[in-house]
Image (cartoon, rainbow, N blue to C red; front, top):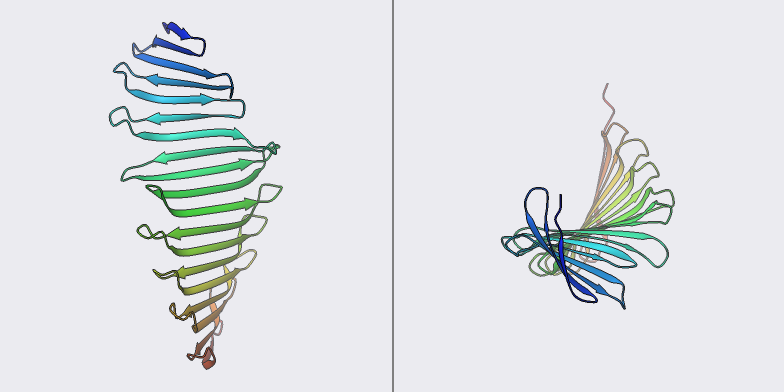
Length: 252
């Protein structure tokens, strides 16, 4: 059985030592802020090393866990109520080499998913940001994903997805950039409602001048077989210079 021993130091601060059922001693420091209504509890192991910090307030709560050997944070979990009555949950996993991953989900008052966000960090620099918006039924509507260069922070790629109501992709657009954020490549894929790609278009650009160099447009049947391809090239003035078309007959 837990064996609590508490000493109250003042009105809003107390210290407690507890012996749990496994014979481990934990030390608790509890603080209460009367102005904000925030309750903070810090828990230490028998060697007085910080294990976790728990915070509770009128609008939410958080739990931070620590590596007792290094003192570094391992994970943060936060829950809060937003001004419109929605709820938000935020989790951060702290990995090695100064890397971390943040996940955020927002729920409507009726429990329906509204938004999800995922971010990846190297130190304080964001290297990935992905966000999905949902409709009133909790089905995905649109997703936007960004990847950034770890050294410069420049945008390297962007992806936009439009979803059908059954959670299948309808349209995917992808952008690739060079080290100076100049557009190098753009692709667009339109999908069948019940199958794979229907039309795929790929555009290549001169990343310095942003002039269009080449376009490839391909069509597919429901089995994923390519049925036609158009390849168009452009001169320095952006005018069409060549066009080559090919058509694939259905075998069998």
